[in-house]
Image (cartoon, rainbow, N blue to C red; front, side, top):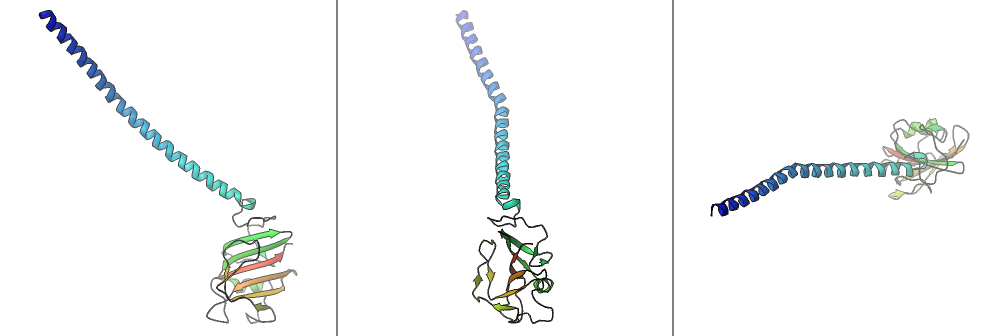
Length: 200
C-alpha cells in the first residue's frame, strides 16, 4: 500500500508539474502575443500611411508637368509667374489654372486687383470707363458661364463682360471678367477672370 500511495503521489506531482509548466508557458506566451499584436498594428498604420503617400504622389504625377495649375491636355508648361495677355497676373491671385495647346494659352484666376491688371495688360486704358463698348461687350448674364474649352477650374458667375483687345505686348487677348450683380459699374469682388492669348 505505501508503494501505491507513493506511486499515486508521484503521478500527482508529475501532473502538477505539467500543469505548472503549461501555466508558465501560457504566462510566457502572453507578452509575446501582445508584442505580435502591437507589431501588427504598427505594420497596418505604416501600410496605410505609405498608401496615402503613394496616391498623393500619383495624383501629383497625373498633372501635366507635375504642375497642379496645368489642365489635362496642356502641351506647354507656363512659368511660376504667369504673364497672361501682356501682363503678370496679380500677385496673390488664387485658384490659378491654365491650358496650353498649339501656341495658345488660356488662364483663369481669382483676384481683387483685376482692374489694375486690365490697365497693366493694356486691355483697358486707365481713363476709360470700366464697361466701355469701345473695348468690350456684355456677355451672358446666367448664373454660371463656362470657361473656354480645355480650361479647368470653376466657371465664371454671371453677368460677364468680355474685353477683346490688343494687349500691351501687341498680341490679341480676350479677357472675360465677372461683373457685380448689384452695381452695374463695378466688378464682382473678388473677380474671377479667364484670359485667352497667344504664347510668345
